[in-house]
Length: 255
Image (tube, rainbow, N blue to C red):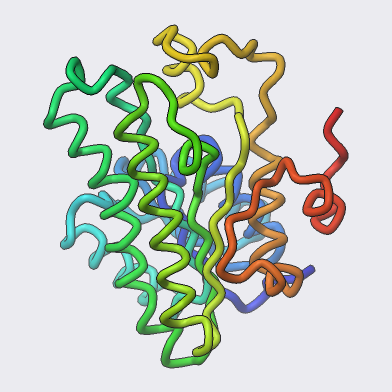
């Protein structure tokens, strides 16, 4: 699979799944815009990609700020031209607390990052894609979009909204050549999972770190979905733990 000649922008790419995805897309030949709230973190991901012969540009991007999103996309276009691939990965788990105990400001902030932030980025990327009649958008979903978990009301609600945003975007623009997909990566060893373990709330916090998947697995799945094989999943939510998907994407079977 080759993504040569394609420009991809990855949000929340300063660490974790986002950083691994930026590396995977670059390895497939894409020009990658590594977007993160902290530009130093983004540059720390972009620089090794360039050193290995790839094309990467760091961009500051706070998905809760309209001007920041607009500036990041403008910088991406200036560096590499039109956006072909958008990976909406920026997300937060906080607040981990029952409804009554959760801070209202933090609760609404989670919705702003996980759902409204995705809308802002979609709106910024779609004009390029519609002009060319093609494009790929991958939204990082979660099993929490479909299953309520104690202490995660903001996260579950935001991811459920994101799942419907994926379907709505496909409904509106799938016929115009856009491929919009939601990807549920399963339980992955990230800083977010460290925060979940520290909370001690709900069964997910009890999972041993040794049982978690590495960030390379969802990154490989996302890169596959950006290529020709992803066309079969347009408008759908993909759980990368699904055996049939893993076989199609070339991922090792899970025990």
